[in-house]
Amino acid sequence: MSRGLADTPEPGPEANITNEETEEAIQELFSMVSFLFAKVDAVEKILGHAIELPESEAADRKPLKGL
Image (cartoon, rainbow, N blue to C red; front, side):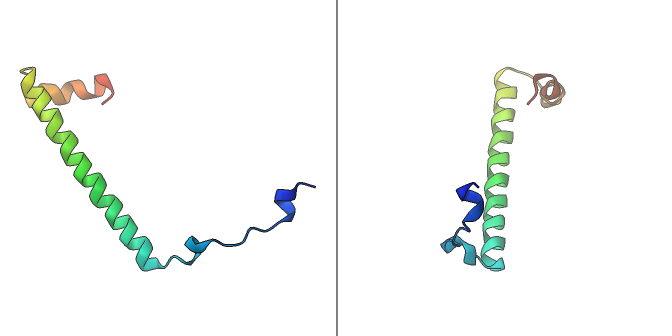
């Protein structure tokens, strides 16, 4: 018999996470993702202007390049 199946692990200190802590972590994650999305959007606009493409053409090319 495998030792891993016979032994039950003891819960670690992270086992006592409350719903409030989980919600706060999720909110923080969403704020980070939205911040990064805004930065990526700004970089796309800058690159679109740097190579002298209108934003509509840059948006049209996005699916072809997989971005």
